Length: 249
Image 1 (cartoon, one colour):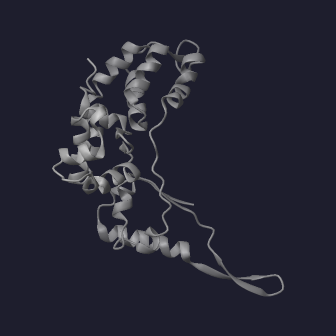
Image 2 (cartoon, one colour):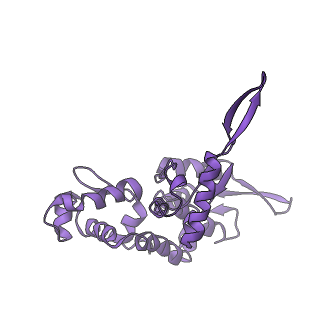
Image 3 (cartoon, rainbow, N blue to C red):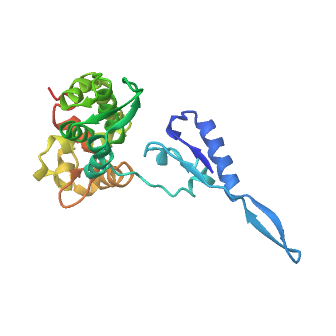
């Protein structure tokens, strides 16, 4: 198995093209195998390739950057995590604590109050990065063996720049018209987020003119949900554009 993470960080087009072409050649390569009875047949290599990174990589991997491999992508865009999943992930801290070295006996357990658990889940907005960020900062906010909501709040103050930068990078990576579509959604109230209204807000005369933008933001970016009324799928982006988040003071 070959796993390449953060693939979008390969900014050199020639390097990316060579890499994808090499992987494509490896996936399609076949060796002549001789079976019992001298029967021969072609067999592909026992190879699996996983490429992980940001959703916009699927746009980068076009015909000029390793088309043989790009056509073989089975693309999966990860959806935000459910709050229930995040609560479940933190529950062992609440019920059993987390064993660490230290204390008088050489071992101790770190516990988390339910209020701290709720605070972390609320700050995360379903985003894996924003889930670990307040958790990490709360862990180091105090030396006691119980993480409280106040520790989460204290730690979050030191993480504001990182959280804000995370949301900003998502928006900055969008093509200009897609970013304008997302900003138009933020400027309109939930009841007004219909395709026709959004298109008019952007200066289009017909809703269909913004349809392709909406489709990419839904299917490829995972930022919005289309429907009779559009809504935000990416809760951190919504919070950043429509509230004072990440400032919770």
